[in-house]
Length: 497
Image (cartoon, rainbow, N blue to C red):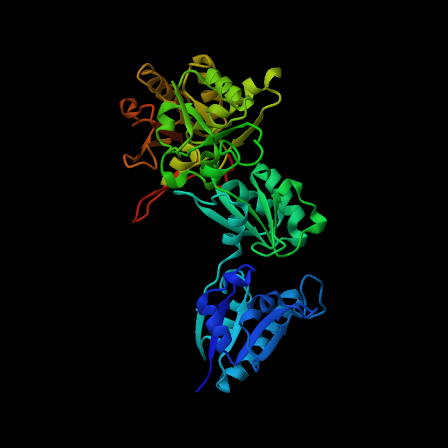
């Protein structure tokens, strides 16, 4: 009979963290296999050493390359593929001879481990069993002594080998974070944490669970002293340094975020992460009602007509050390709070307060996508609200946009106190364009009450348009493509004017 292949997780480094089952299987195996670099030493073997017995065959699987270059015709990846294939063949010889083989894996065998490359090559022919191990993530979290994730928080595990922009994007969008594969990558990981505004929350753990374990803030680490077997952990929002009493108080800042047009799945992960990290949520009460605060967050709701006061309030909170999320619907830079915050923040007294904007899906994009691509070519975005600009300016811009043959996304078409603007808009359109010009009406797009309707300038009924409706006026090229599953409205990219 063929032998059995065991993938045995050894945990993060402390031999006492090897499971009882792993210790029993190691002691009983005929063959003990482990990977190592060219120097021949194996951390996995040293962890398993208390459980080895005399007479066992040892197979040392030595990597042909680690981080250096190679003259292999397939490059670095090709060299490793050939190595894994040859290593699997060596283990297969023992298995076919009836010997049970234990392949040692630091941490867990299927968590960033070399064992998985053997498993994929041998599992079809031989009986295999995997013994899970304590991961370095768990050991590093224990070393820091701060809860990593709590409640509904999510954990993002990231390899430090990614490029800096990709790392920063993931760090911005994440709640709790674990970064593996440091060593030479540490400098760019630290830079990405700084770019994402997460550096003050991050902890460095070196050789977790061992006698030489080190734990310190990432900002205090000497990059020249970082080994491969180290990790960065960033606790989730409930246990971050801000407001949690751990580490150094991070500087306050204001982040203006856009929730998107309505559906939860149209709120970007980056915005969700900013909301989770904030100590204070500031915004119009209707928009804040869409956010589920975590325990401990302070909510500051206000009326929709006090944008400057709201911005000043948020900046004042941040000046006193709070991390403030100013909440807008859609995108915060489109008729929303980003410009209000920026305008107030430009005053000299707020120069020391950090301000960032995290974009969201716009209502115009959501309505356009719901019907096809009516904004597929040049377009304008105009608000019909005359609260912050005269109606004469609005009317002039509408006329110029139509004269330029642009598609037009129309925001804020009406409200309880503004009931005549859509009627006047229709009159302007009848004066300046064909009554056959297409118009899309999207109301509450992305929400359960969503309604969509495509009509024309001539058939537009102003009475069906309210504040929750967005209009898209097509250009002369906008057309309808009949489809069995629903017509598509689109403006072709080629447009000769």
